[in-house]
Amino acid sequence: MTGGGPGGPPLLALSLAGQSFLLHGDDVRWRDVLAPRYAPFRGEGDAPFEVELVANAEPPRDWHEIEPLLEPPASTTRGATIDVGTAAFRIAIDAGARRARVEAPLHRAAVDVLLRHALSLLLAPDGLVLHGALLAAGGAAWICCGPSGCGKSTLAGLLAEHAYCDELCGVRREAAAWKAWSLPYWHGRPAAIALRGLYLLRHGAQHRRLRLRPAEALRRLLREVRWPLLGEAAGAALANLAALVREVPVWELSFLPQADVWDTIAAGEEIGA
Image (cartoon, rainbow, N blue to C red; front, side, top):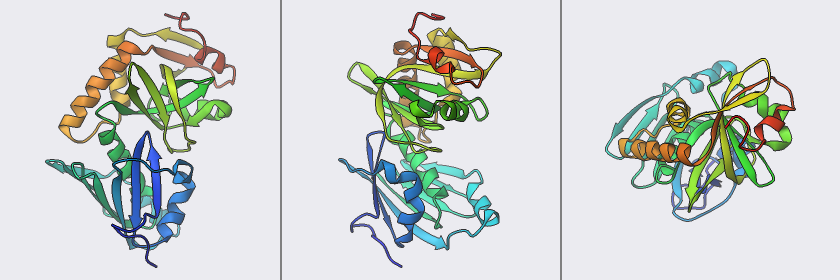
C-alpha cells in the first residue's frame, strides 16, 4: 500500500510548539499508527520540516516485537546531520535542509524519537524542550519538571482538567514573555499559554513550595532539558535556559497525591518567595 511520498501531499501535517512538520510515507497505514497520538496536533505552517517514512517491517504484533523499538537509540553527528538508530530502526536528520528520513516498522516509536530530536533542534533559537507536565488555567501555565517517578503523570492525572501534557513540553520566548506549548507525550492536547512559573517536583509529607534562586534553578533544570545533539543548538538552548530562570519564577514543589495541590501550584508568587 503506497502513501504520499516526498513531493506529494503529506499523510499527516503537524504543528508542534509552533513548528510545522509534513510527514510523507510509503504506506498509508503510517497515518493510522500515528493518528492516535498526533491527530490532535494537526496543522500546517511556514518552512515545514519534511519527514520521509519508509516501512521496513509490518506493524509489531505483540510486546515481544514492540520491545526492540523502545531500546535507547545510539546517535552520531557529522556537521549538520544526525544519525539515530537501533537494531530495529534508523533515522537520518539533515538539520540544515529541515528534513529527515525514518526507516522503521509501521509503529509510532521511531517517529516519536525523530520528532523529539527535531523539536529540540528547531526550538533552540528561542526556546527549548523540557521534561515536564504542562498544567494551566485562566490563561496562565505552569510546567512541573522532573525525572521519571517524580510525579509528573501523577499530577496530570489528579488535575486532568488543568493538564495539557504529562511528559515533554516546549517553551519559547516571544517578545518579552515566555510561552509554554504542550506536546503529544505521553498524552497531550494542544495548548500555547503564557508561562507563569516552573516547578521541580518531589514527593513529600505535605504540599509545600520553596522559591529557588536563579543559579540553583539553572543547576537543577539542566538535567530536565531535552538537549539538541548539535553543539551550536545546544549552546543556544543553554542560553535560553539561563534567560528563562532569570525571567520566570522557579520553585521546588513537595506534594502529596491529592487534588488540592492545585491551590499550591496556582498560588500567587509571594508564597515561598
